[in-house]
Image 1 (cartoon, rainbow, N blue to C red):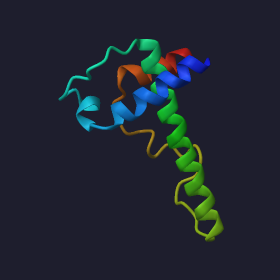
Image 2 (spheres, rainbow, N blue to C red):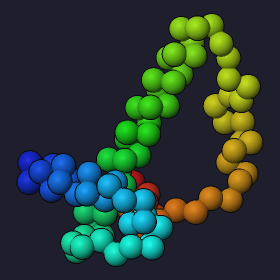
Image 3 (cartoon, rainbow, N blue to C red):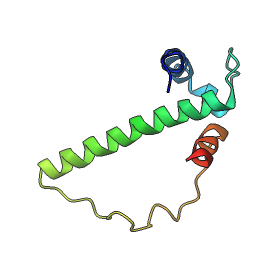
Length: 94
């Protein structure tokens, strides 16, 4: 990702995160965001979630605890989930 894209994302992500109504569609975001930018934003947010999951796994292991499910167990994967268009765009590109 180019430096200009990083600057754009550094500005857009906090703005979008400032009000949950932007994600639900209850409030319209005041700036136009292209689908490519939206996919990059979704990617950055997913990367942050992944870092949080990794940190949780490290903390659990350090305490000697164990999570009931294992990688690939499919219990949570069987739940229907909703994704937003930017997330779908990012997944389609990977």
